[in-house]
Image 1 (tube, rainbow, N blue to C red):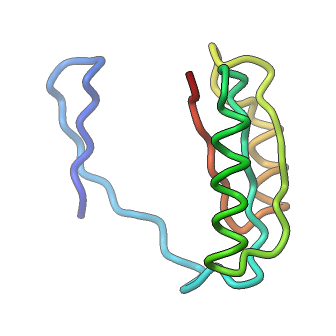
Image 2 (cartoon, rainbow, N blue to C red):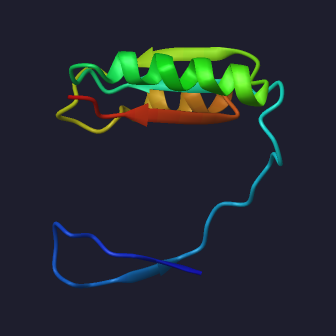
Length: 94
């Protein structure tokens, strides 16, 4: 079990379990890169994607973009990415 503490609310800490790992390595994996739309997040994600392909043999990179950094990802968009990708990485930028 891990402990999650939300610094934006009261000190109500909650325990949670990590999701089970479906993959033990990234070779051939399809990785989603979700651009938050903040300045430079696309550059950061491009660099991460390149490194993942070079060092870990990641297969396809699926690039997507949130409508705005000020809101969470839309449910439909999250479901589509989850269906298309083995994992998704997002970045803030700036």
